[in-house]
Image (tube, rainbow, N blue to C red; front, side, top):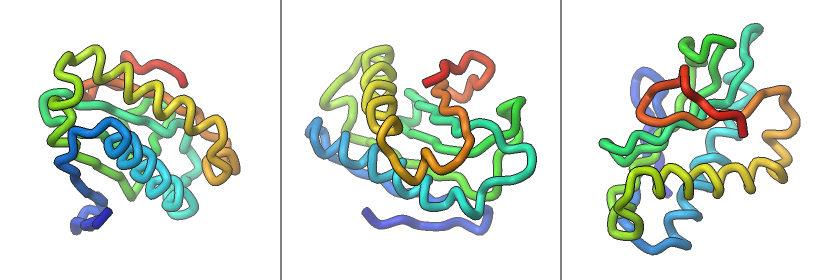
Length: 133
């Protein structure tokens, strides 16, 4: 996957695939990429690794945040899945599948487990309604 980095340290990539295994692989690769940035991203008040699925943009955002989940650390990771609706069109089903993939993955992700972060997932940028993973 080719990652582009903006001036504001947003690392972004996209895939147009609608194949489930390729979508899952892209999501897990984005998580790995974000986990590789944890050394640079952890601050004194870091508490959450927040995964946010934005249905309208078909975009997964991964960010380290403070306890309020409003202040993001320096680096964020965004993955756009433009072909995801070709696999699953329903908003809730998309969110549930992303949640499942990430939940199962982070339980064994050695790099993530080195840090004392709480994993949470939210939808459409509403971090106040996040769910702990």
